[in-house]
Image 1 (spheres, one colour):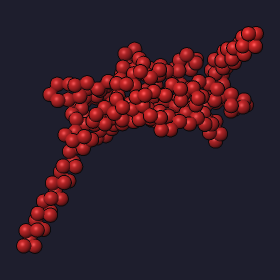
Image 2 (tube, one colour):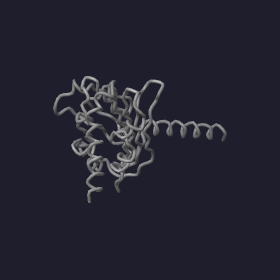
Image 3 (spheres, helix red, strand yellow):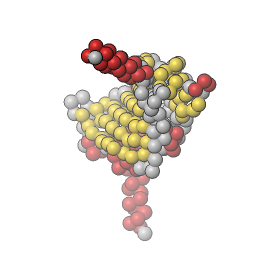
Image 4 (cartoon, rainbow, N blue to C red):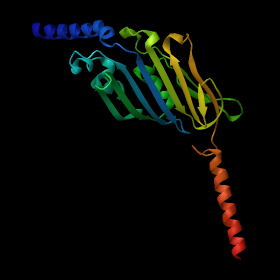
Length: 229
């Protein structure tokens, strides 16, 4: 019994030490990137990448014990029935003294992401809009404030590929069906969210230019056959 209590105390002591030292050890800005591709049936894939500069005197193993950079901890958070994890890695880039975590997974439904621990307050959705449109939304979350990061040094980037023609959005950049948002956390106000309205492609994930291209090809073939006759 004593040994169990002693082991438990050592674990608690270790995690308390990590929480106290993290703001001192991670010296640079924290960057977060989220790239999501949504299909016509609301399934899709997501890529997450977050990284920061660190103070290197300590052994790299110590940094990887921080939950957000601990692959065992992250794997547990993403072990859900509604998604399949395809890639997970955490590493230190000694060339610029940064520590990174990359996560890639497929999901069965966009709404199901709200069940993930890191997205439970994100309110991610795609719902029906007027005149056959779809409305997309996601709230911005202060993921790492509990670790003592300064919001002035916290940068966010969100990229979404939506299955349709974009009608309107609050994105910083829109290129075809690709939307990009960039934030500095101290500039984010309560209630800040990603918003977009789009018209679904007529066929799953098929943009209109495909139809025009197919029509031109058929016309060329038709003209060629007539001339040949």
